[in-house]
Length: 260
Ligand code: ADP
Ligand code: MG
Image 1 (cartoon, rainbow, N blue to C red):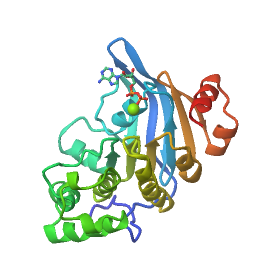
Image 2 (tube, helix red, strand yellow):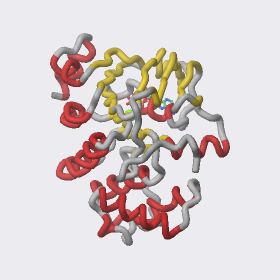
Image 3 (cartoon, rainbow, N blue to C red):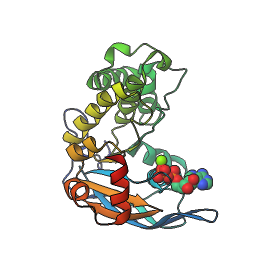
């Protein structure tokens, strides 16, 4: 066993002692002329839930993608558990399994069953035996409330169910942190809560999470901190209650007046 492996709770979630897990330091990123991330600094401690909000185009997705190295950065550093993001190869594959990612658009493998979607990573990247991977996948599917859908293909499921499978798939890798980029934005309204409930459960179990969302109910219930981004900068960083009741910048006041 990897001696760096974290203690796991019964549900398989890494638990920690609140030390820095994701450290983002002086990060800058351009797309051509466009300066999309401007001197971003923040630290996410183990077990923390950080909600990132802000207007469209402010750089929220780019920041998430940079933490998973789906985007490169121009300057600054991002470390996960004290280690800089690897450039490529096996180390990068390993990083990607330590940093789970859930997208707005579910991104399930369309030609694999629900169960296979959850077992593929553990078998290929973590080297689990199929029987072991199946057992753990069924536990996770049960946990997100879709165990009875295991044999179906993704397109036979509702959007809310697919997104819960995507969360189970991400959990199956025992990630140290999960990034979620607007995980409920593509869902019909009646399905949003079933996904938020799963996310709240994860947060309560001590999962470290960075969640881009405009679901203020989730932020109030589950977030330790809110980061407000605009124009590539983190303009405010505060506890949810502080931020929602007492935003300091005009940008945040304006943004909140539109979404609340
Ligand atoms: P958000 O998620 O907050 O809406 P994004 O991080 O997606 O913001 O985008 C930030 C800015 O970067 C936007 O102006 C967007 O158009 C631009 N952008 C994002 N991805 C790319 C890309 N691959 N190439 C060029 N511009 C991009
Ligand atoms: Mg986005």
